Image 1 (cartoon, rainbow, N blue to C red):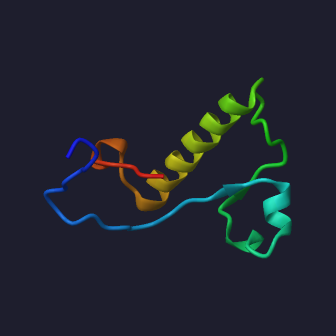
Image 2 (cartoon, rainbow, N blue to C red):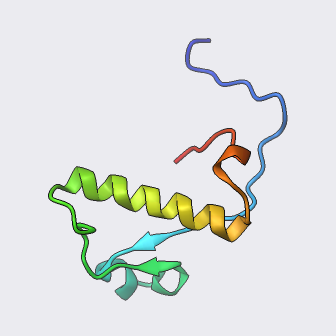
Length: 78
């Protein structure tokens, strides 16, 4: 059971936050993104750093939408 997470309470999905780029916004799901960025590197030098920044912004957006702090979150799965 090294790869199993057993949760004491049932998890629940209370909201979501999505960030996309120009290509995503032009697609069929474009209207469902919370934020569209015009610069896909988020002002950082590498794709990996940009991906990290995008994830950080999405989590911050989600916390704001839910009106909760990071201390209220037990687990994030993405």
